[in-house]
Image (cartoon, rainbow, N blue to C red):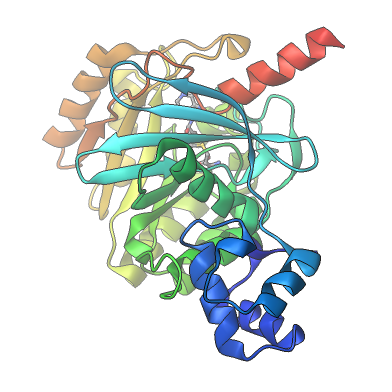
Length: 346
Ligand code: SAH
């Protein structure tokens, strides 16, 4: 049985043919799926024989809502969804001036083991399918009753460690008979898998790219992000520069400020030296403290000082608005809590 949210429009047309239907029925089906319908009987322009065939041979896998937290201050909502195999993923819904955004997860767990992050604490469980990533969008719209116009792949997981499904997810949502989402409305964030950055720049030059930098030199970066041992800065920065040159698009560097680690004047001086002259933007994130890591946040005041230093050196920088500060804000915290609760019940 196929999860229809995994299929491109062309594949849905093939499915219609398999069911003995003309290809345009596949296009109609695709349209319904992206209107959010999950019941074949509600797809009123499909012939009875086709809906009966679909009921036997296809499914639309909605996710099961396991937990939901809503911020009382800014409209942010965080969802923990159950997958058919019992795993769980987190999705965040955010309201911005320019439209609603969802932050989706790309993997259950993560194998990158960044020192500050909750998602990698228990390692990688498995890749999500394109359909499961799309479901995070579709089911969050269902749960909130709101339309979403932008998607950021910044939840649990390393998207470039699951490239095939991430590229399929973007392609499907891009299709004009479905969501018709512009590439510019996607942002993919990576910890810095250099060969995949190069491939992505070729295949998705219009999609926004964010790179988690978090440190201005190899020694510090390797201690915070083990991936830096495979792809150190003298490979990462040229790949980022090549992305901006190839696409003409600004790259975003994420920099989580960790007290006494990467927020010193010395570190910020090195950061300026590293990025000067590049078509980029630095997104400063006061660290969300995850108690298991023992790392502390620099706080908003220091983040503002760092922003001013970068701006004075000609590097555009913003301090990320802290959305959902009153709910478990940091990546993977809700999922981690649920796992810990389940373990303590065992
Ligand atoms: N694996 C991808 C995307 C997921 S994480 C990546 O590394 O970019 C999304 C962003 O949140 C990354 O920049 C990540 O480094 C950051 N992040 C993870 N844990 C954090 C924490 N506790 N506080 C602040 N930012 C965090």
